[in-house]
Structure formats: structure tokens, C-alpha cells
Image (cartoon, each protein chain N blue to C red):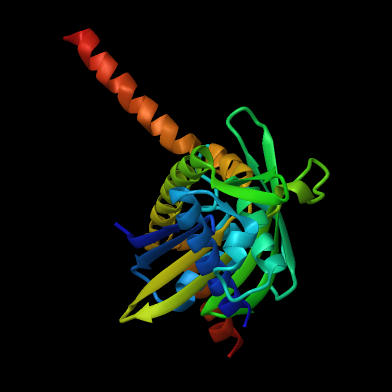
Length: 119
Length: 165
């Protein structure tokens, strides 16, 4: 259920970012596009704003949402760098898995001997 | 190469990495379950991780620190949200202050790990979702140390070559 909600949330936010990258939208203008409440759309915008992907500005009675191009660019390069971190982690994991653990082997060999001696 | 694919989702500040290992699912599960094995790969060699606590049960917590090249410590906490051994693991990951208290304003990073057998190998998918760019920036700064060092080492080697020529 949580995952389903998350997936819908991701799709909505992706759509919001896609739209505001092309042109500016008011929060109510965005709310009219989705089958959800104004408050729900406002919440998605707030999440995107917090993530530095969009900016929100008051204009009269409207709140105008725009793409934060610098933020989007930075997010992309940070995700690229984070991917490198995970690539390095998986290399270390592969090395760790390739090791034959002499300690563990000795231990299990020791155990086997002990149990034989006991038997 | 162990990584077979990756997907970046800018809007969700998320990264999904799929890797394949030459080991069975039970063996790969141990690298998460056993803190001594976890320590050997979580941090880069220049920022090795030490897990002081690793209560590997749903709702359990872990606390760790990473030690930088100048002896500085970066502390973090985990909370295991769901564990389904040896198939999946879900946890929240955040920063702690010097007293080990979570730093709330840095938010949490949500991790979902899935292990699937593919013949006698194991496919591991790790989905990481951030809340803010600030978190990503801090983690990348710590985690990139090694990559930077490698790149600088190459520059040094090239410079040395030219000096000799």
C-alpha cells in the first residue's frame, strides 16, 4: 500500500517537474490537472521545493511554481556521484565474497574435530 | 563489472542500483546481517565504517561512524523498518551528532535492498531515496573521497611521467 502510494506520488512529482520546466504554473493551476485535492498537490510541491527541484513564489493571490534549474542540475550530478559510490561498494562486496575466509574454515574445522572427539 | 544497471529518478531524489554477485543469496545476506562484514564495504577505505550497534531485527537500530583521513568522525544511525531474511531489507539511514543523537534537520535516507537468486548467483537491487540535496551532498562528500584520491593519483602519475620525459 505504502509502495503504491509512493509510486503515485513519484509519478505526480515527475509530472509537476516536467511541466514547470517548460513553463510556470500556479499551485491551483497544477491542482486542476490531477485527481487530487489542492492540499495534496501543495504537499507534493512542498516536497519538491524542499528537495531544491522547484521554487515557489507568491504573486498576488497565486503561488507560482517554477523549475529550480540549478537545483535540478545539482541533483543530477549528485545522483551521478552517488552511483559511483554504490559502484565502488559493489566492487568491495564482490571482493569480500570472493575471499575464502580462512578463520571461518579453521573454526568450522575445529568444531568438527571437537564434535568428533566428543562423539 | 558487478553493476548491471542503474536508474536515477531526479524528482524522487532516488537511485536504484542492480548488481550481480558470484555467491548464493544466503552468503550475500551475511554482508548486511554481520556488522563485521558490513564494515568492510560500507565506507570507502579512506572513510572506513565502524558499527557500534547493529540490532538486526525489524524496529531495531544500528549506530555507526566513519573515520576520515584526518581522524574526523562522521556519525550515522540506521533503523531497520522491515527484514525478510534472506530476501529483503528496508531501513532508514540518517546523520547523528557527536553524542550519537539523530540530526533531525538532515532527514532520512530510505533504503530498500532486495536479493534474488539467478542460477547460482545473486542479484541485489538497492533503492536509495533522499529527502534533500543537502543529505546527498554530505554523503557524496564522504563517499567520493576515494574516487577523488584515485583521480588525483592518476594526475600525479601523468605529471611524473612528463617530468621524466
